[in-house]
Length: 324
Ligand code: HEM
Image (cartoon, rainbow, N blue to C red; front, side, top):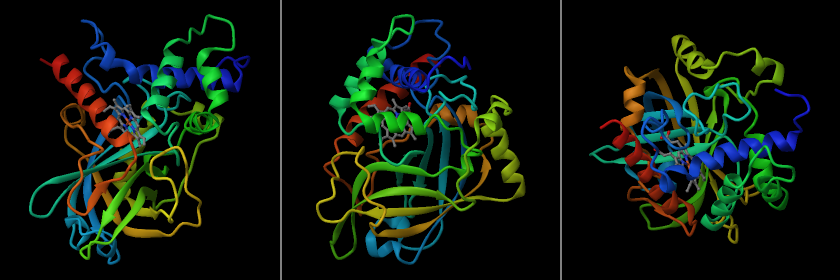
């Protein structure tokens, strides 16, 4: 990396790549010959794994959802680099945020999804703000003098700046990052008691990020390679935790992090055992939806899940078209 490139320039460039890639498909279905058309327009590079989820005994008190009632259920997990570039080096500062998407196969049939990113607090809270970020990113031409539009946006939105700064850090492993849904959902138990909360996937192995020197020494596909090595030693486990909102905590703005003293509920353990046989085909066919819920889990007043589901469907349609 050019050492004269300041931290904010690097961050702004990262945001431009991330957000610009994200706007994407909706506006531009992808020209013929575009080698990225067959991939997600965000979180394009990933690996699909499988395992099980075992709920903890307290999970049913929060939600009557079938997978929280006891017994083990199968899960499909996709880990990803957040970049729009399917060929991004895993050790690049522009590859983040890392993602962990989980699909639970419910007892008795049905599916439900949860996605998380490795930063507590999303960059923005509303679709309008996200659009403003995308427009600033798209209007940014790195050959033009500073301040770039995306730099101006980030200076005016400190939580977005923090998001972009933190997600530039390279984790040691997909299995040593913590992932946060950031979006709030409402959990309903069998007595009809409703409680808002946000999901966290916390690595049992502990969190570990790489220094710049350590990251620089890694290979471009090291996150997938490391995961396969880790599976050879044993399962990769995450605690599924829900952070509960206190009365008055905002549920409609995913960029506003609730204080650490909020109660958390241990919902169970996600135990990931292997990479699926053909991960590349599997990830093209898979799409996770933030609004794919089940009885016992409801949308809150958070505006992002519905917006995200529309965007994910567009992105899915684009990669399907590309493989026709
Ligand atoms: C709380 C905030 C968010 C979180 C936690 C999140 C998380 C994720 C994750 C984990 C993935 C990868 C899913 C997979 O592996 O298939 C993903 C993909 C994606 N995200 Fe987000 N995201 C967030 C906000 C947004 C927003 C606001 C947009 C734009 C409206 C967006 C657009 C996309 C798109 C288009 C994809 C590709 C989906 C596909 O093709 O399957 N995300 N996101």
